Amino acid sequence: MCAALLQGCTVSRAQIREARAIVAASPDRQTECHRADHCATPSPLLKAADQALADSTPQHPVNIVTLLDDSAPALAARVNLIRAAQHSIDIQTYIWDQDDVGQLMLDELVRAARRGVKVRILADQLFSFENLSLLDRLARVSPNLKVKLYNPTFDDAQTPPLEFAAGILCCFMKFNQRMHNKLFLVDNSIGITGGRNYQDRYFNWDENFDYVDREVMVGGAAAKQMAASFALFWHHKRSVPLIRLRDVNHRIRSDAVAPTWPAPHYLDPRRVARLQAEAENPDWLKQHLIAPGLRTGKVDYFSDLPAKTDDPDKRSDHEFTSYLMHMVADAKHEVVLQTPYLVMSNRAGRIFKKLRKEKPAPHIIVSTNSLASTDAFAVYALSYKHRKRYLTQFGFQIHELKPHPPSAIRAYDRANQQTDNQIPTESLAIVPGHPHRHFPGTERRPGLFGSSGRRNRPAPLKSTGRRFALHAKSMVVDDHFAMVGSHNFDPRSDHFNTEAGVIVFDPRFASELRASILRDTEPENAWVVAPRRQDVPVLGGISEFIGDVSSKLPLFDLWPFRYATDYQLNPGCTPKPPYAPGFYACYTAVGDFPDVALSGKSIITRLITAFGAGVKGIL
Image (cartoon, rainbow, N blue to C red; front, side):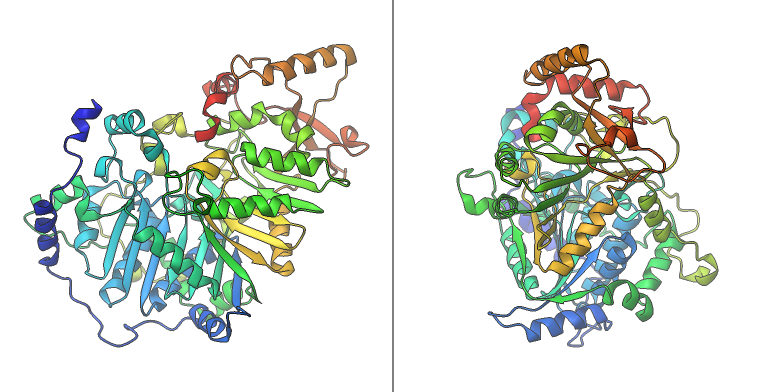
């Protein structure tokens, strides 16, 4: 099967030349503006970044840093900066969907390219732009817009199930390595990085399931580091232009008539129009993006190198991962860590074990998902397996996000304010009679361990209402070093995916980020994981012993009574850590999988706990 697929895996030079000629001859590719600034709209964000760059010296860099917790400012900042771009826009992402957020961003980028701005998009192939018609349009829409896909399977933009299976069988290490970086960079002056992809659920625009996520916007000297990193990825051999992809090349050569760029068809056009209006409102921008910014000095943007798995011993390829490990290893007082997937790599485990032995040991506070909130139940199963190790050997104080946290609900409401009476109907980008299509994101794509179709949906709940999952990846060490990025602090991020992020060396920013993470650990938003209370000492001791033996087995870890479970704070009590005196008087056990209805998902979670230890590194 693999041999048959591999026979046609390359595009000939003649086919590339033919496709290039067709693209070049496409109509409506003229630049619409010939001014030096390419008809850019003035932006206070870009102006502040340019000033920081002008004030910087090699010895004393200057940066403007803004924490982007709320999704509306994060999206409005992008729209504002795209319209303000005078020279270049570079975007790197793991997922790009065709829902409202995906359409809005592409339409804004096409408009920028048509007025003369150089736009480059680099997206991971496996989870982006699976529509060949869309890729055909992007290839021809403007000579200023270039798209590349990273690490395409068999040089195709689409990955049908048969090719997915063949990729695993024939070349697993290459196939399994993905580009997880997220970067948005304008004029090499200001950039945004963090956890968000281009999909509704990352910006609180999904009606059913949204992510609690976070980014940071940096204007100034650090943007040059971002530009250098993007250039490394853009020119790497794994980043493939559209005309070199077999299916896209064939589509271009077989299209007799060049496709036009259509108006976007939004599921909620009024919400999009409101966001666009906010992106142009000076008062709104000042309140949500200018005033919260901090003028600071040293800020570093780190990224793993594109060929992270080519030479596992080449330490420079893992620059960002290595730096994070050093940050944790140097902790003296406290580490506040937020990660969607609590599956520690061996290296991270050794570091936390060593910290646990320090006198006094630093406090380790961890914010992560519960089974009720996560959509990656297979990964959660491995975290569940090692709960005792995390609590006793690493000293973690673990808080698991609830599926309906009030803080996330409030953020969703802020991103979906109803302003129908303020937006004229004629400004809405909608075509009458065009059927709106809802794109549920990566649920429709093939994947390992239940990542396609219904299997990738979260476990059913006893409660009702809009659900949220944690997706933010952040860390604060000793109230001084603060990191926001794409690294999940798991084996996949350590060894396979390329990751990136910003490290800010400013106590003010560290304090702001720490408060943001701890807000997600408050009792109304999260359960706390703690040892079970042993009401029957002898039987409890026997059960714990059997559980210890069971958890050390790579297979057959089936003992249902685990060392730890989830707890909820009682009304009238003050929050306290699990080992504090009086903890059990103030907390009530709510079970291992609170709010999860008995279902195949909870059963599979226990089965993966029992039999899935061997796949920990790639989940």
